[in-house]
Amino acid sequence: MPPAADDNAPAHTARSTRTWKEDNSISALPWPAIENLWDELDRR
Image (cartoon, rainbow, N blue to C red):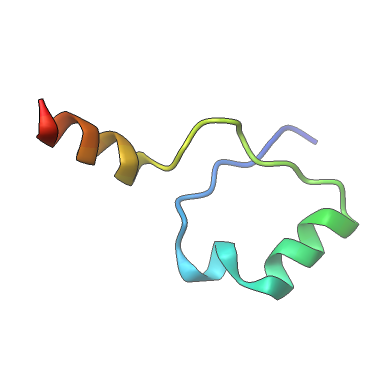
């Protein structure tokens, strides 16, 4: 299964969700959530 793209929403970061993803070998993409990008762009 391809990696998932999470947006740090509470449903994506809940312990039960993280456990389920680990149990089902679902990984997250290695880059940070889009909110971090918007913050970085605001600083420039």
